[in-house]
Length: 179
Ligand SMILES: Cc1cc2nc3c(=O)[nH]c(=O)nc-3n(C[C@H](O)[C@H](O)[C@H](O)COP(=O)(O)O)c2cc1C
Image (tube, rainbow, N blue to C red; front, side, top):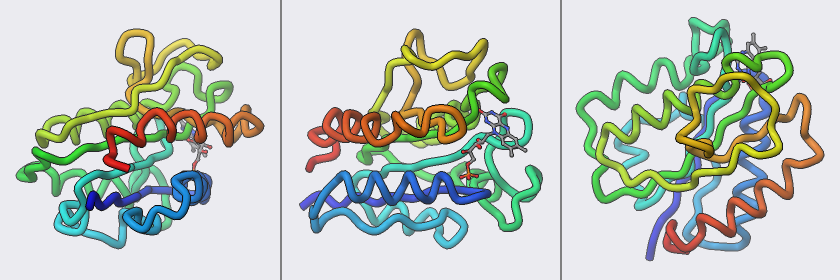
């Protein structure tokens, strides 16, 4: 039985909320664990799962959340150095990122791109690309051609689209997650 873990970083709680909604959208699947803040876990905790759904906001100037971006607690910035020697081959990973396309259109969801690069380097199978249609921005480090490297949520400007985006993305990735 495939086991799926959901982990997130956050500053003001939006990414935690989206992680919970993703968990709910996956339904009653016994194999899906409740979302946990990345500052409460280790690499070994992530490796206990076959598949992972990982979320991050973009803070600072296109950066991962953490003490340097004025978060009150450590977050992804403090976690990613631990990935240097990690081996996630055989694991499947889907990412989601939160950002603000109006306020930060030059660095929209950049941290999603950084998280993608970090985990792709560990040998994981990365899934869950998402079309960039319907977002308005000038630059994003999270693009792979015409698509983002994960689900993009903008609670600042397009919150009314969030639940439909989550539903569609979940139905797209469920088979690859083994659910
Ligand atoms: C100080 C600050 C810097 C931000 N920088 C960016 C950015 O560079 N790119 C972006 O897309 N969004 C940026 N945002 C928007 C956040 O990513 C967005 O509000 C997100 O929903 C916050 O998620 P959280 O509540 O989980 O921390 C920034 C927000 C703040 C407050």
